[in-house]
Image (cartoon, rainbow, N blue to C red; front, side, top):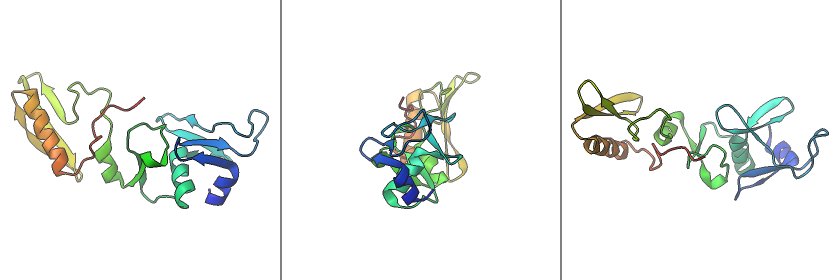
Length: 166
């Protein structure tokens, strides 16, 4: 997809993150229709000439005139929020520093787990492709404090570990 082809097919509103159709495609679409369907990973996508494109990547192309060689991070974790102010270019390593809290997390904090066998809390972090053990704690709050301090030390984003926005 080129920026000229993209702008020929769609309008993009950078303040809402919404793409709309500029040209009619088939009997089921019309000019002005909002573009995009959610894929299995929660990202909005569109099919053009038989190829699927993620809309956050097209938003970046539309506004910057080129694709990003690196990944594009949704700052607020909402994969459907394609406002340009919510998108930032990150390497895969950097993008890992702004992840949502996984759904099966039981402590409410990334990298903090409860060990039933010892009755204690464990804190750890993965930074620069390495796991780092932060300690075993009697109190959950101490484990959280150790984890939060490590996030600051290793340059994690302030949104890291927050629940994904629906």
